[in-house]
Length: 141
Image 1 (tube, rainbow, N blue to C red):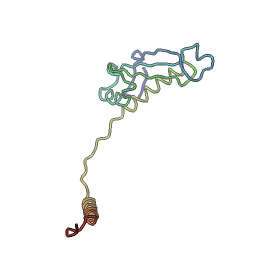
Image 2: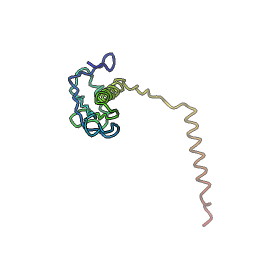
Image 3: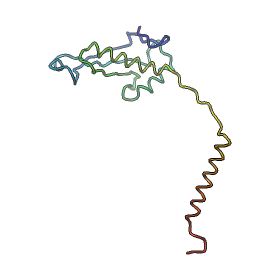
Image 4: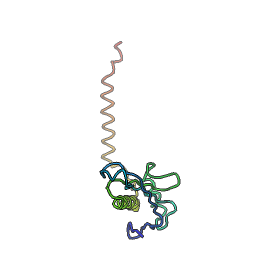
């Protein structure tokens, strides 16, 4: 189990890793060893994550990292070793889920103050006067 928060966890069986040749740093090693990691996590079928969190996580992951089937795919090739890239991919997945675990603050409806209503009406009156002054007088043509 990989714990994201005290109540949220990722089952390691739900993670699948594939390794490919990476671009970037690595010297001669970059052409020989598959160090880049592609992590796949089936978000919609994962246990240990409430549905509301899954919905928020899918919004955070966005269309670039979320497949039609509900899998999050994270590419990691920042480091030269396969193990560090694997850890990086897991940390990035944990960051997405940790952000999704925080419920959004509910909006509290408020009414405009009397002073703000007066300011708005004054501004409209002033603007109308400016526009009225731009017009030609009625008798001139």
